[in-house]
Length: 143
Image 1 (cartoon, rainbow, N blue to C red):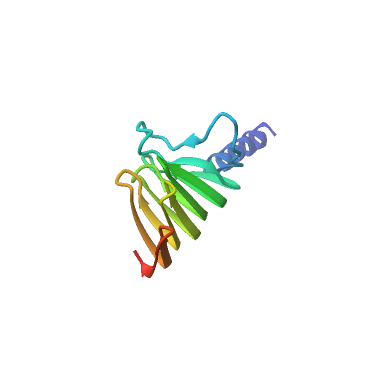
Image 2: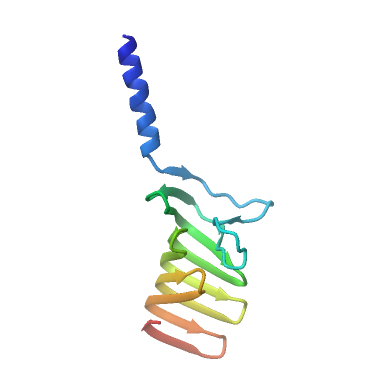
């Protein structure tokens, strides 16, 4: 009997360890949550999302997987999308579905997919890309 309980306990612990951590992301008055790093100018802040899953890919890589009305911020730039994966090791995030970048009230960019280099502040967009500054509009398959 004791052996069965011990086996069941080990099985439960192993099951909990192997599962990704899932949490509900809520915005609060305390301010946004920042991705791990040290430089607040290059960090991407998570302003909100319906679901957040943190998955440890290996010893050095942690993925933050966000889904549902995702809102991010870096400096004066705001990012909106349906889903996003932030890789804290490579400092890259990818976003999918109704991607919108609002850059300091001067320009808006829309696309279906975004690959963003966080440290370099460099965006690669594809899928019905539209760039507008309020005076003119540029449309292209990728940018």
